[in-house]
Length: 136
Image (tube, rainbow, N blue to C red; front, side):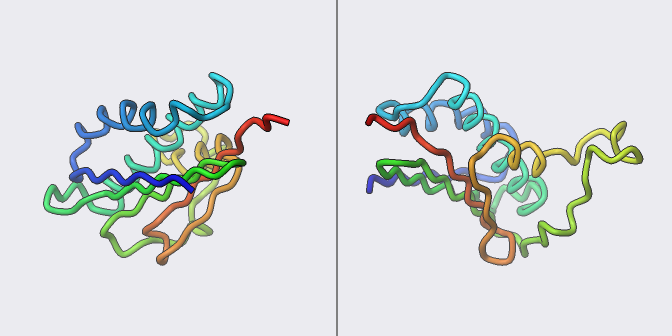
């Protein structure tokens, strides 16, 4: 299993460097262009949440990304230095009373775009899995 690590300070401007990292680590993977877009948007949301909500934009704290590739899937683990959160307490952004609110859609977007979404370390690590195209 191939692995890569990436560490960035908790500064929202650092998100611009994510695309080159994702492009580099996935360059030999078999997936569609739309799957690549799903990966890019999902990881960007996870990192953005880690910077803003997990690390409270504290530039002395870091967001760590671990990328793992197996034959059948790609896995990204995005970890912050915060206390974590309970994903079950995230309100549904599509509910009528929240539909017009600005923000609060990151977890919903990640759930929709990745093939599997898991939380570890009391919610301070999010695991995003994406299935690869079978070569059989």
